Length: 202
Image (cartoon, rainbow, N blue to C red):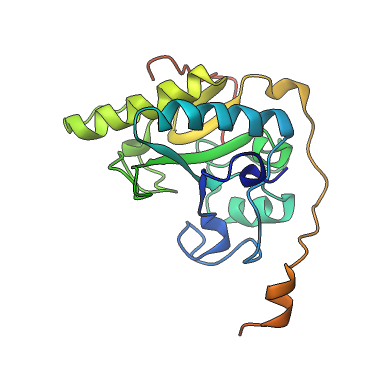
Protein backbone atom coordinates (compact mmCIF):
# COMPACT_ATOMS: atom_id res chain seq x y z
CA UNK A 1 0.00 0.00 0.00
CA UNK A 2 1.19 3.51 -0.85
CA UNK A 3 1.86 5.29 2.46
CA UNK A 4 0.55 8.59 1.13
CA UNK A 5 -2.75 6.97 0.12
CA UNK A 6 -3.33 6.38 3.84
CA UNK A 7 -1.94 9.72 5.03
CA UNK A 8 -1.07 12.30 2.36
CA UNK A 9 0.47 14.60 4.97
CA UNK A 10 3.46 12.27 5.32
CA UNK A 11 6.41 13.59 3.28
CA UNK A 12 8.16 11.09 1.00
CA UNK A 13 11.66 11.37 -0.44
CA UNK A 14 12.88 7.92 -1.41
CA UNK A 15 16.65 8.26 -1.35
CA UNK A 16 17.18 5.11 -3.42
CA UNK A 17 15.25 6.76 -6.26
CA UNK A 18 17.98 9.44 -6.31
CA UNK A 19 21.76 9.68 -6.08
CA UNK A 20 21.63 10.70 -2.39
CA UNK A 21 22.52 7.27 -1.00
CA UNK A 22 25.51 5.02 -0.43
CA UNK A 23 25.38 3.69 -4.01
CA UNK A 24 25.55 7.26 -5.42
CA UNK A 25 22.99 6.29 -8.09
CA UNK A 26 19.27 5.47 -8.28
CA UNK A 27 18.34 1.92 -7.31
CA UNK A 28 14.59 2.54 -7.74
CA UNK A 29 12.62 3.92 -10.69
CA UNK A 30 11.97 7.65 -10.39
CA UNK A 31 8.22 7.08 -9.89
CA UNK A 32 8.62 4.50 -7.11
CA UNK A 33 5.98 5.06 -4.39
CA UNK A 34 6.65 4.48 -0.69
CA UNK A 35 5.00 1.10 -0.13
CA UNK A 36 4.40 -0.87 3.08
CA UNK A 37 1.95 -3.46 4.38
CA UNK A 38 -1.49 -1.99 5.10
CA UNK A 39 -1.22 -2.40 8.92
CA UNK A 40 2.20 -0.70 8.84
CA UNK A 41 0.74 2.21 6.88
CA UNK A 42 -1.89 2.58 9.61
CA UNK A 43 0.87 2.64 12.25
CA UNK A 44 2.72 5.35 10.33
CA UNK A 45 -0.48 7.40 10.16
CA UNK A 46 -0.77 7.06 13.94
CA UNK A 47 2.83 8.25 14.38
CA UNK A 48 2.11 11.16 12.05
CA UNK A 49 -0.88 12.18 14.17
CA UNK A 50 1.29 12.15 17.29
CA UNK A 51 3.98 14.26 15.63
CA UNK A 52 1.58 16.75 14.04
CA UNK A 53 0.14 17.48 17.48
CA UNK A 54 3.62 18.74 18.38
CA UNK A 55 4.19 20.68 15.15
CA UNK A 56 6.25 18.02 13.36
CA UNK A 57 5.74 15.28 10.81
CA UNK A 58 7.29 12.19 9.25
CA UNK A 59 9.52 12.09 6.20
CA UNK A 60 10.04 8.66 4.64
CA UNK A 61 13.46 7.93 3.14
CA UNK A 62 12.80 4.26 2.36
CA UNK A 63 9.97 1.74 2.66
CA UNK A 64 9.40 -1.47 0.67
CA UNK A 65 12.63 -2.37 -1.12
CA UNK A 66 12.59 -4.79 -4.07
CA UNK A 67 15.04 -7.66 -3.68
CA UNK A 68 16.89 -6.65 -6.84
CA UNK A 69 17.56 -3.22 -5.32
CA UNK A 70 18.60 -4.75 -2.00
CA UNK A 71 21.07 -7.05 -3.76
CA UNK A 72 22.68 -4.00 -5.35
CA UNK A 73 22.75 -2.15 -2.04
CA UNK A 74 24.53 -5.08 -0.40
CA UNK A 75 27.35 -4.82 -2.92
CA UNK A 76 28.04 -1.27 -1.69
CA UNK A 77 28.18 -2.23 1.99
CA UNK A 78 28.93 -5.91 2.68
CA UNK A 79 28.41 -5.06 6.36
CA UNK A 80 25.56 -6.76 8.24
CA UNK A 81 25.55 -4.00 10.85
CA UNK A 82 23.93 -1.78 8.23
CA UNK A 83 22.62 -3.87 5.32
CA UNK A 84 21.13 -7.34 5.69
CA UNK A 85 22.88 -10.13 3.82
CA UNK A 86 20.59 -11.02 0.88
CA UNK A 87 20.84 -14.69 1.89
CA UNK A 88 19.08 -13.75 5.13
CA UNK A 89 16.84 -11.04 3.72
CA UNK A 90 15.90 -7.50 4.65
CA UNK A 91 12.71 -6.56 6.47
CA UNK A 92 12.37 -3.77 3.91
CA UNK A 93 11.63 -6.49 1.34
CA UNK A 94 8.85 -7.73 3.64
CA UNK A 95 7.15 -4.33 3.57
CA UNK A 96 7.37 -3.98 7.37
CA UNK A 97 10.25 -1.49 7.76
CA UNK A 98 10.77 2.17 6.96
CA UNK A 99 13.64 4.62 7.14
CA UNK A 100 12.30 7.90 8.46
CA UNK A 101 13.26 11.29 9.78
CA UNK A 102 11.26 14.25 11.06
CA UNK A 103 10.25 17.56 9.47
CA UNK A 104 8.95 20.77 10.98
CA UNK A 105 5.61 22.42 10.23
CA UNK A 106 7.02 23.83 6.98
CA UNK A 107 8.15 20.42 5.77
CA UNK A 108 11.83 21.04 6.38
CA UNK A 109 14.02 18.37 7.91
CA UNK A 110 15.02 19.05 11.50
CA UNK A 111 18.50 18.47 12.90
CA UNK A 112 19.28 14.78 13.49
CA UNK A 113 22.49 12.90 14.39
CA UNK A 114 23.46 12.18 10.76
CA UNK A 115 22.19 12.13 7.21
CA UNK A 116 20.73 8.97 5.64
CA UNK A 117 23.07 6.04 4.88
CA UNK A 118 25.74 7.33 7.24
CA UNK A 119 27.22 3.98 8.18
CA UNK A 120 29.34 5.25 11.07
CA UNK A 121 29.07 5.13 14.89
CA UNK A 122 27.44 8.58 14.77
CA UNK A 123 24.29 6.96 13.35
CA UNK A 124 23.69 4.72 16.36
CA UNK A 125 20.17 4.54 17.80
CA UNK A 126 21.41 5.91 21.12
CA UNK A 127 22.65 9.44 20.49
CA UNK A 128 25.76 10.23 22.55
CA UNK A 129 26.53 13.71 21.25
CA UNK A 130 26.13 16.94 23.20
CA UNK A 131 23.75 18.80 20.86
CA UNK A 132 20.58 19.25 22.91
CA UNK A 133 18.44 20.11 19.86
CA UNK A 134 19.41 16.90 18.09
CA UNK A 135 18.83 14.91 21.29
CA UNK A 136 15.35 16.41 21.68
CA UNK A 137 14.39 15.90 18.03
CA UNK A 138 15.49 12.28 18.03
CA UNK A 139 13.63 11.60 21.27
CA UNK A 140 10.40 13.05 19.83
CA UNK A 141 10.67 10.90 16.68
CA UNK A 142 11.56 7.73 18.56
CA UNK A 143 8.79 8.24 21.09
CA UNK A 144 6.16 8.71 18.36
CA UNK A 145 7.32 5.61 16.51
CA UNK A 146 7.46 3.51 19.69
CA UNK A 147 3.94 4.58 20.69
CA UNK A 148 2.77 3.55 17.21
CA UNK A 149 4.23 0.05 17.46
CA UNK A 150 7.72 0.23 15.99
CA UNK A 151 11.13 -0.99 17.10
CA UNK A 152 14.37 0.85 16.34
CA UNK A 153 17.63 -0.60 15.02
CA UNK A 154 20.81 -0.39 17.11
CA UNK A 155 23.04 0.94 14.33
CA UNK A 156 20.65 3.30 12.50
CA UNK A 157 18.59 5.97 14.22
CA UNK A 158 16.36 6.34 11.11
CA UNK A 159 15.33 2.66 10.78
CA UNK A 160 12.01 1.45 12.22
CA UNK A 161 10.35 -1.99 12.07
CA UNK A 162 6.82 -2.88 13.09
CA UNK A 163 6.69 -5.01 16.23
CA UNK A 164 4.56 -7.47 14.25
CA UNK A 165 7.34 -8.13 11.71
CA UNK A 166 7.45 -11.89 12.37
CA UNK A 167 4.05 -12.34 10.80
CA UNK A 168 5.18 -11.33 7.30
CA UNK A 169 7.22 -12.88 4.52
CA UNK A 170 9.08 -11.21 1.64
CA UNK A 171 6.98 -9.52 -1.04
CA UNK A 172 7.55 -10.61 -4.64
CA UNK A 173 8.84 -7.97 -7.06
CA UNK A 174 6.39 -5.13 -7.63
CA UNK A 175 5.93 -3.68 -11.11
CA UNK A 176 5.86 0.12 -10.95
CA UNK A 177 3.53 1.58 -13.60
CA UNK A 178 4.33 5.21 -14.57
CA UNK A 179 1.45 7.67 -14.04
CA UNK A 180 -0.21 8.99 -17.25
CA UNK A 181 1.55 12.37 -17.04
CA UNK A 182 4.94 10.63 -16.84
CA UNK A 183 4.11 8.59 -19.96
CA UNK A 184 3.07 11.71 -21.84
CA UNK A 185 6.25 13.56 -20.92
CA UNK A 186 9.21 11.20 -21.14
CA UNK A 187 12.35 12.59 -19.57
CA UNK A 188 15.97 11.97 -20.54
CA UNK A 189 14.74 1.13 16.78
CA UNK A 190 16.15 4.93 22.46
CA UNK A 191 13.94 5.79 25.12
CA UNK A 192 10.68 3.94 24.57
CA UNK A 193 11.88 2.35 21.33
CA UNK A 194 14.08 -0.60 22.20
CA UNK A 195 15.91 -2.25 19.32
CA UNK A 196 15.58 -6.05 19.04
CA UNK A 197 19.14 -7.36 18.96
CA UNK A 198 18.02 -10.35 16.89
CA UNK A 199 17.60 -8.05 13.87
CA UNK A 200 20.81 -7.64 11.94
CA UNK A 201 21.13 -5.12 9.16
CA UNK A 202 18.17 -3.79 7.24
